[in-house]
Length: 362
Image (cartoon, rainbow, N blue to C red; front, side):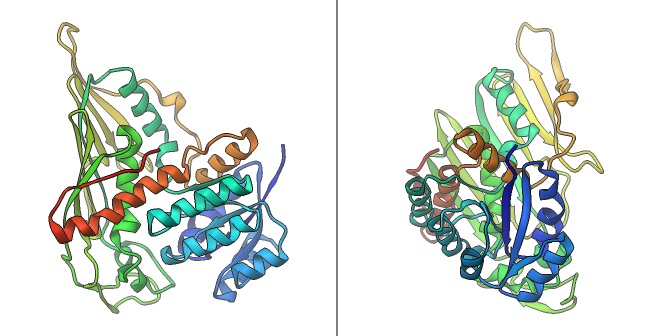
């Protein structure tokens, strides 16, 4: 099996908490270099990973390092420029979400990847989770009848609240970033993975906590001005054919016992439920089909099918599988572009109070 050489750019807390420890568990991946605009961070990560190469700019990395795949874990506004440079240099690409801040930007990446004969994909990873794959199968098999509605909630109390950070979290509240791009993309990914591309979008949004106290990390106790962007969203989606959905997202949820997602059909419900201490949601299904003699909740007998190992680095596994088999990644940039179109439409929805049509698909 070929070992693919992986270079990581963006040595922040996510890279350190996820990729640094989990990429080595993917058998055909080998980390060969780190890159960050703060050289000390790149050097420190290289030392932790036991690799020799580290760089302080994407240009230096591309010029001096021999590698196959770039993993872009930089800040949200930096993604598109870095992604385009990597693709132009002939590197396969995995990018953190969003791949770009506009539909046009993601389209440029799609077209350049095709022109260069490269594979590219983007987070979030949720479409690859067992719970998502099993739910798609149950829906396709008609277990809950015709789908009518789905509700998703992906939110937390803010990056300054629940994540330990050595880097200042204030940038999450600046234009070009924010709760929508950071958290909303997860909820939109969940719902479109199960129901397909949306046709229309509407939204209610608010800036509910305009001043925030950093509760962890190096800057504990500092106040952040969070007044520039909404931090609280209820997004409504029309999928056509009588199917609608709702996504609650933002930085205003200190804690929750709500399921991550529920899908309602004419014959039942699929619920994504997490038990205490459970890292990933499992499925519970409410079945109610006239004439069956059965009505109530059950869990699919699929425990042996669930992954013994799953992590955010499965985004990389998806990309490497696509390279090996010359197939479209599950987490394709076309899927990402649809999410970006929805997120780009939301500010206009807020400003005008209108429900807007969507045009992309995947």
